Length: 250
Image 1: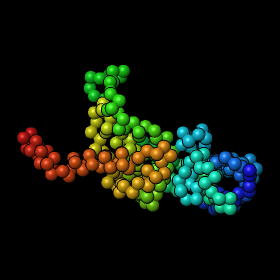
Image 2: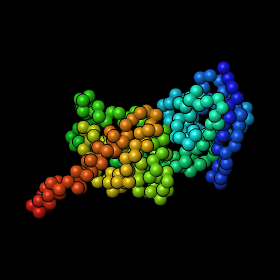
Image 3: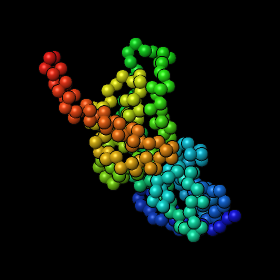
Image 4: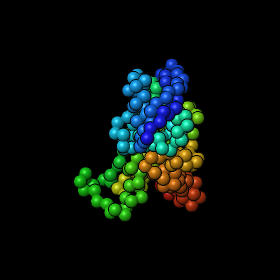
């Protein structure tokens, strides 16, 4: 079964652009990326779109469908009615390169700012020993495919461009939380999370969790526990008193 579907696709580049209307054949079982590819093949050969695996594991085909950040390869056409107009636009938080392709280099810059895994002294690579129970809590975060949908939907940077310098976003705060929970990581990551990566900007609206294609509970399992650890360090009166006494003794 097939039908002629109505689509609005953003076309343009760094200098500007606009939505253009297309009518494209839709077949049973297809996803939005199939439609974009058919549009390229039949009507718009110069349409730019980033994709790779078409299996929901590379994170390349991130875009916004009807205003919601999604993976094009995991958004089934069966979720829309035949008479619906499906609007496909680039990720709003990042600068447009061309059409549906955005410049996500912001994320790689933030990734480089996260201190790498720091094993304890005297333990060489190949000598790491951990029990499964010790890594279960943070293992969930390793499912991240870096599609950056959570970064795109986070209103801290989506609506406030000037926050980007001081805020790393949910994906990299989750990375810090993962390392902070790692049983063999020896670094104290709480000061950097608070001062360098802008943890305090996050107000736990859970929008990042809602769009994660891997269903990682980013807010509940990473960001809130990391906030609790930072609060314990900086605002718990007993911890403050203990640190003050130690400083005086020193």
